[in-house]
Image 1 (cartoon, helix red, strand yellow):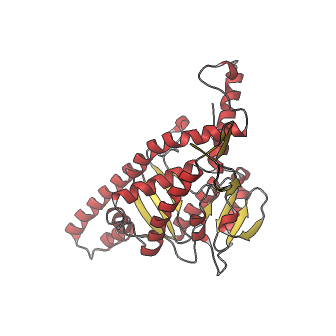
Image 2 (cartoon, rainbow, N blue to C red; image 1 turned 45 degrees about the vertical axis):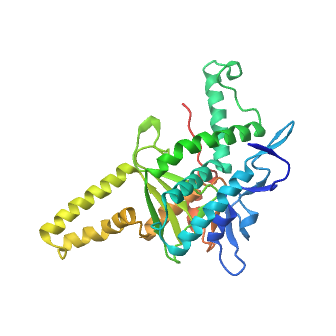
Image 3 (tube, one colour; image 1 turned 90 degrees about the horizontal axis):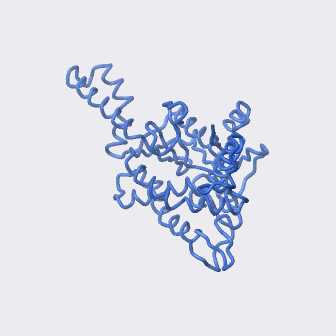
Length: 330
């Protein structure tokens, strides 16, 4: 982090350029749902998902901040996101473009209010767990409990370079799919837009993490488009199924009813993975994606349409959804 004097005071943890993809009308306003209060309102993208000095850490010699770095990354990534929204494909991107986009996705995961709150909550649980075992965490040489909000801010920001360097290669090794939905079923975006999901279970060890087998990663880019990252093991399974389909096609012919049924289900995903064509999302796909945005958001969910029925249903079913996910400590 660099000591500086002049920089933006109101600092976004979800970039305005990303939120602009979810606006509606000539005034370009967002519909906002506050999970903590249940209230809804409309505003401009630059007014939300931001706090004063969110990336500033005070030192005796001045203020250290990563805001200029984030601004530079956003500026370069925004051009790629605009290309995706306009050209509706990933096929035109170079390897350098994909590296930049991967870096943006990983940094976006690490920079939010939700990540910081989860980090602080985990540290608190670790300290409590140690005390229950008769260990004073303040006396340990290799661990010091976080003392206050400034401590949390500095510690979480310090993790960003190392974690980004570790996770970007993992993301580049996944299957990248661009997903599109229609106007009637728009994507939502939350204040922690990089969301993870895994259908596999690994018991005590958990199943969520960028490198965990089976994990899928979602990032909405606009009310129409989202990026979907698929685990390499799942990609292998999809491509293996496609080879079986090719064998069936050569055996029974492309006009066979079963072959056509399998092609309709498998073909679009295979083409999206291998040719980077856009994958059309069905209504259930959109609901799944939007539910992840609701669950991962720390407080706010944003919409182009103002339809927050899914948010309300999820809150009614599980009050824990009022805040973002928290880790468990044994």
